[in-house]
Image (cartoon, rainbow, N blue to C red; front, top):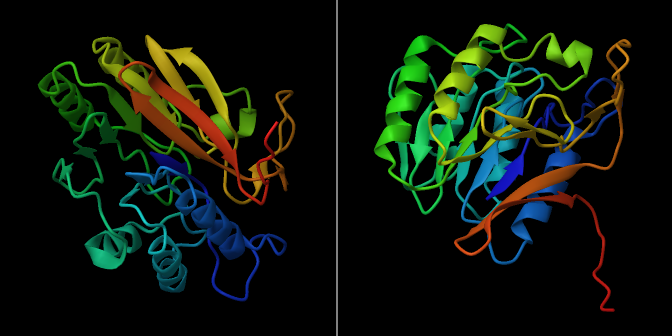
Length: 266
């Protein structure tokens, strides 16, 4: 399973924040994912696919994601427009064939397979922070119970833990929602990993009896600062995430740099 996050696409001919060519960044990330072998069976977009949620940005997203060569599971972020995400899911981007939506107005659902991928919609735009309602947590609990012993990966936009990046933590998942999610996850040892985006950095920690992590951004990063400084961005090397599963190995997380890095035999 591939993972990309925080593309922040802008309209063709524009630059995000006046400096970042995010369309090229996403195109490069799509190329990196589509070149992986064996081919990916699923790609998860962890949200903030666009920067302003305009129709032109989503039209560009459809063109770029359409060439990825794998089904795409879309999650909205705080920069996204919910109708724009729905339009992509209505046929512009190939959806996972085994995706079963939870129903309702949110984008929760489960992709059935050897590893079950459960999507939780934390975004409530235009608010920057995220939350989960009691109905979502009840659905998650029931869905996990129905899965038997199958391993599970939960994917979302806002991470359920504090990263130490103070400004980003202030617009993370609501503490009450994070506590409720932790209570559900802790009851189900089949949850192998909880994956999020939002912070534009790769972070991980032990959480609720499992591993919770964020994937890096495919365009600009949030500058590393755990001393409480003002929010800043940087142009660090972008990367995508890859999760692999095998019964004899379990779930293994990789980070793959976006760019040209030829392999040299020893």
